[in-house]
Image (cartoon, rainbow, N blue to C red; front, side, top):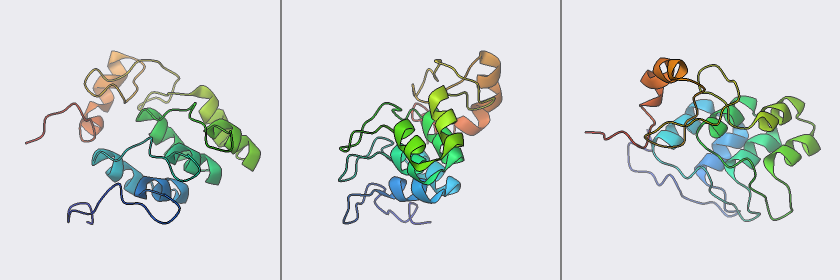
Length: 149
């Protein structure tokens, strides 16, 4: 609703958290998806140079981590305190999140590890043409490469 009303998807609060950081940390899957669909910066940095992926890993949000990875989040990004999202998840004891981060980029459809990306947006990951076809109906809603009318 707020995005439709023109809210700033990159607004920052006092610690530099963008809406995507807050949604990711809170595990708000629908909000994360809406922000990404609206073009929110998946690599936004807060005052400690944490990305939304760090925020999700820090609070153990497995589904959000999967969504951010599939959207092309940089799994190797380091915060000012030296940790990447995987190291932060391990430090916080979020072992299932750590396993997802170890896998890296996963297919949007079947969740297997892949290096293939959508040819339009170069962000979403698919492991095969079959999975790309199966996931297209959903992905085209958020694909930055699709021209919208």
